[in-house]
Image 1 (cartoon, rainbow, N blue to C red):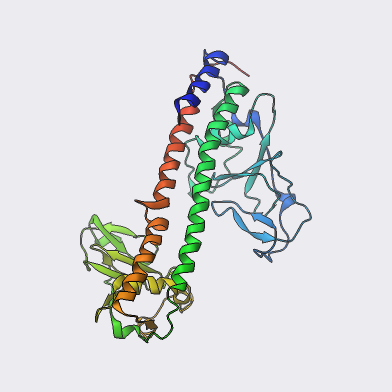
Image 2: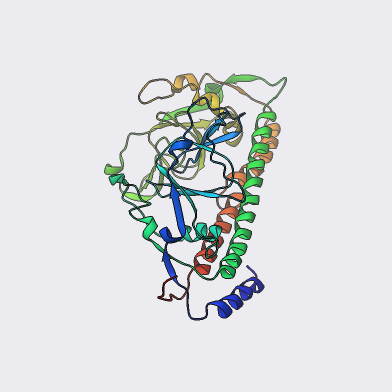
Length: 376
């Protein structure tokens, strides 16, 4: 953020509220409505429909409907904040919608003469509160509406909104670029493996498969070695490994059965299969190929309560085996896309994370005022 932007805000504060800012309960400036009359009737969701169906929680958009009766007609001029009454997650909404769950509140502005609704959205973001989720209690009336927020004069609020909107717009642009790059990555990942005239052989001919070792968190010692249990991320960390060096891990059971990941560090694999290549097959080439058929691997899951994939079936998969030079060429291309779209230490994910931290720092700083103990 440039010094010019901050100096303009400081000038407004010095002019309009030099002695501090009044703090008021959220319930004094924000009204709420239950969404009951906007609940969608049909569950026939389709991405080709236009009306989003909102739900409580982080998932937010459950799907899309063609049901147009009983819409909540939010817009750029008439926005609403969707507040999940149980998890306290919330979203800014400026488009028409239906809702699935009544476990939410729809927040609107009470008095535009004293408050900027977008400012209130940012102020809610600064509230540090973690509910006891085990109690499953509604939070707005009993807790959130009583939290006090700073309410400076409107020109100060609007300047803060302008500054923070610039941050969110930049983050949104980076996120949109990341989405586009991921689609581009997926496109090339499939295109590069359309290899005509290339021999295909069973996976067992170019790789060996090892089974992970059974272990629980309770009988391990905490350390720095990732434990690969079955999810997309390490389940926890321990002080021992059962594999060192390059490896492809395929989760064996659970919701992510069939999920393929690549590792080149000491790991402890438990509920999964470890692939090691042989006969000059490139490990990274094999990983990228298996990722290109990730959905097919997920679809091989068997079982009811806890689905799983079978190692012997996976080893029968036919793998295209081009020359070592062609494998290296494909890996070089996909490595660049992979780093750009997934590397949390570099590329777009790292830049987005840095921007979010910067935004949160300035948001908290900008919404911290000397308290003036008087009523509105």
